[in-house]
Image (cartoon, rainbow, N blue to C red):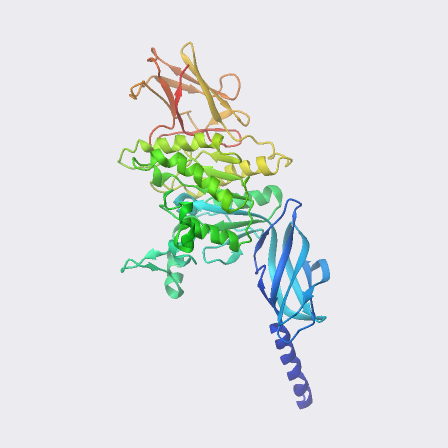
Length: 487
């Protein structure tokens, strides 16, 4: 290159650098963000930013998807005092989109990349929502599923979704030797992540399944925290902001746009004790109501998991109290749904296995598709899963009838999980055979011997670690229930 050519090239380089810095977006969207779509399947992207030395000039934008223009150059607004703002309307469900900009008719290097328009879901609760499954054969990432991680960064979602130690909000941080909240950063954080062996949950499998069924992109807001009780999730603590679980969740909800499609919840193990179990129903129902109030979404879909198994040498009768409270709450809370977890495998004494977290994700997807995509082929008309209705004696059998069954009730192996108690609570070991093939597919037949005591009651999944294996043909599990009067 000649000296003259070099002298001409230098200003061009400087000019490109200046244009690359000439515009920035300061609010509205960041790379990899998922924008909540509206009822019409589209959204309005409200952007604002700065542009130095461009007062009076027009800021324009266009939208591309995989190098194809889907919305050509249109004006956003004029720069005034170094600032600008404007709207991109009717951005349709889908993506990934690239939003490019120009100032005064000249394109700038800055762009927003990998933007999606779809449905946002909050993930909240304790460890089984946080995910403690083995990081082996995890759900693979999907380009249409992104995660707003606990450090407030949008990215393509991959296991594990939750990393508490690096969260923005210190309620999630571990306590150091001085008993002070301590955030992991730098090499310490990299080492923690590299050595992590557990962390698979149900959020990613749920989202991937929803994308496969509907084609709608999904954004996840990871907010769960292991070992936490309803008291720790108390909405009354929201004024503490990032020093409370509820306050952190609410802040992140607002940071992600202040509108979501629904909330997935898995919690209750920490309340299955003598002190908390009796108050659990009221706290749980109040929590759901307050979330809907603070989200300003009175009909917000709220789907949750009934707590499952716990292997330990301690007797905890209140475990079943929480399970039954969760089952009964579904009928009391509108726009809610519950799935069972009593029949799934665990990777340790209490945490759902990686593979069965995938099952729970599909069960959650069944609820969401039924309620939100009723016209969806194969999935829009799926039933909620077996709901116990009655238990009646006919000869030497107890016929247990269920509602909302998909096809027939079936079992993985020999049907198991039912038990009978007398009025004083003592066990009545009288069931010798369980059949799921009695007449219609929504009836399970329990053959028993002898005479049942007066006021006997029926249970399914009694105790902390029962063996239960009943589900319907859509793999919606039979929930823990009881006591149910035997008629």
